[in-house]
Image (cartoon, helix red, strand yellow):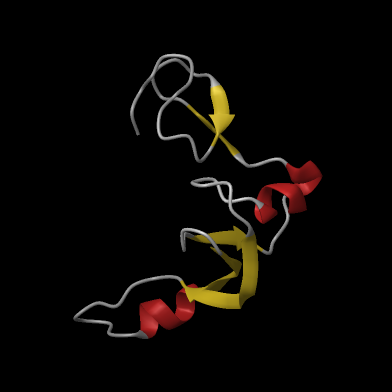
Length: 96
């Protein structure tokens, strides 16, 4: 993780302060299986940072990606590959 990008707030450019590491529970509960699906899904560990100026909270994965690259996905419209977290394809503007 790039420490420079973590130290500056994306909203106001204030200083981001690390406040801890937490596990976020994955999965969901259901009426029939109750909590079992939630328990079996596991958890995702994140670092929590808060801006000292505006109070914005950011979560950062503690699991690094190989070569600091994000996983990619392929657009179903045009077939181009791009980072998985893009809300739409940068080539054809297909909305996910």
